[in-house]
Every structure is written in structure tokens, then in C-alpha cells.
Amino acid sequence: MADSTLTVIAVASADHGCTHTDTVARFFRALSDPTRLRLLEFILRGERTSAECVEHAGISQPRVSVHLTCLVDCGYVTARRDGKKLRYSVGDPRVADLVVLARALATDNATALDCCPRIPPRA
Image 1: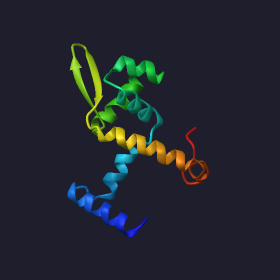
Image 2: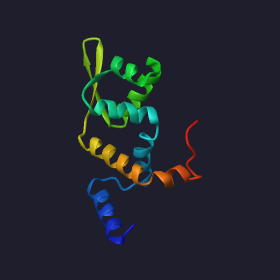
Image 3: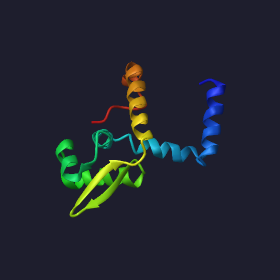
């Protein structure tokens, strides 16, 4: 990474109050689960109910609930009550930009990622 890029990252981090590498690592860790990422991408296309998320994910309601709670707790998604239903939407439009950029980077680096011995594929 170029020195100017590192400077930009350091300035951006200081400007936004997040100077702890652990916090940034946790930010990405929340997205490291394929089910959470799939749910987030589904919600990016529009507000969704938990039932729609369960149908989309194809897993049990309690497991989807755990993943949605993580996405809410980490600030990627907001939840609002609508009668008996919870409706989920993306709270910050930058999340969509992040997912698009991550997909592009993963595509460009697919060979290296597939061969990386330190990050094995999930079972």
C-alpha cells in the first residue's frame, strides 16, 4: 500500500474517531459470515420482514434472527416494528458501497483468496 494511501486512512480514521484497529477488524468480522452477508445483500435491495429473510436464507427462523440481530447491533441494518412484524432496512447507504467494493475486490483477487492457506474455506 502506498504511503499516501496510509496517510489518507490514518486521517480518515482520526476524523471519524475510530483509531483502534480492533474496532475496524470487528467491523469486517461482522461481515465475514456468508449468511450475514447474504442477508445484508438481500436487505440492500429494499426493506424486508424477518419472514422474508428466513425464506431467502433458507435456514431456521432462530438462526436468521441471530444473524439479523448481529447486523442490527453492529449498525449495518436498522429494525422497526410494524405491528407484530419487524422490518429491516439498511441504515447507512455507505453499506451498499462497501458491499459493491468488496465484491469487486474479491472478484479481482479470487485466485489469491482461493489459494490463501491462512483463510481456509468454510466447511
